[in-house]
Length: 496
Image 1 (cartoon, one colour):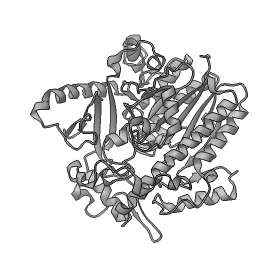
Image 2 (image 1 turned 180 degrees about the vertical axis):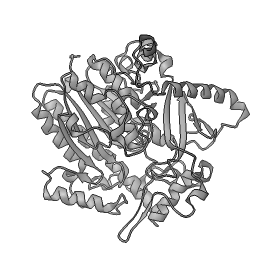
Image 3 (image 1 turned 90 degrees about the vertical axis):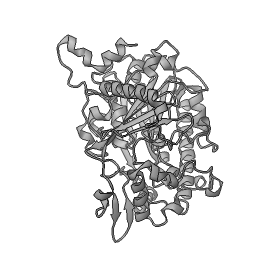
Image 4 (image 1 turned 135 degrees about the horizontal axis):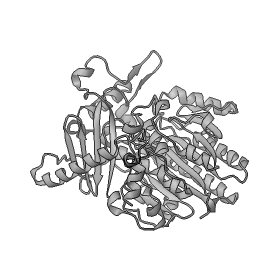
């Protein structure tokens, strides 16, 4: 591999990991991405750091868990705590850097060579055509509701198409410099709109049935029930809209898949493909109809915290089956640092995946489990706390909407660990959940209080405690040499 491979980090927003054919899903939603994953190394035990956009994105860029970088909500990210992030280290290595697409993190225009942002309500460029501006206004007017009909604009107006076009233009302009690009798509996040032909690819009456419905909500708890209540309060046809929302969601996955094919074929045509390392991942998942819910918001369900992740490019070992390691979004920065020969910054809590990707020896035990966080702190909201004021419900004279990330659903603190097919979650009030994912994929049979599973519970509680101490913030790093062993970079290096 060349010393300075180009790097493209492709991120989608709210893409659930298990709705692709390579994961056994009956619909072929991402055929091209599946082929790229199988040509490289892909993980089916990859997890976000927190199932919210901003915390997860800051984690990806800084290699730090949310409790360390201090961003636990979708705002205030300009105050993230870290030493250096992906663009800092690549910029000092001589890379041309760019963010094209959705930011929702701490990156500013003055920190990259090229900066062009898009959000769920459109783009910001002054170069937008009249048709693109009309489409963006149409997106804004949806207020994240699900349209009944196909999007009345062509594919060329869709944000992924425009983002890829802009990325092609920028890459063509950098000349012989290596480049580091964050190619960030706002889809398939709500409002789940899809143009033809994607609107009709997966009709609602042909979709695979959901595996667990709204009948599971009482056992899942108040926050889950409150999500459903919010949806129904904002949209009386909420339940009836879920099949169409699922259909559009899967159609958007195919639209993204086609745009990724278009982007990679551009790299091939430019002679850049062989020296470009492509990382594909999402910030978090989506209920996609499970539990009678769409979007996200409640706790640490597998459909929200497990993410797609694969690497494809120079030096990456090809393997059709998934790698068995448990990995995290925080592992991206140290992995890319090792790939290009840059020292990992202080305060990074992730582990380099480079030995796993290149087929060399690695400490398997260090990748035998994975950790994630959720919650903004305080005590959990309950029924009495939302009896009159309903956090997240927005009703005006012109529209009705809801925010699933509200004071109720995000209240409290929860942590989780997965090891093998076992998963344990614990909140700050000592309430636990234990699931055997091999037999209970959608987490409806809580074994935490089961005497026959006491040994498994005990072992996972120890594992969780160890992870929480590892994720404790090591910044600022003390100057005295012996104290620098608190730096997680040194911890992982010493245990390789």
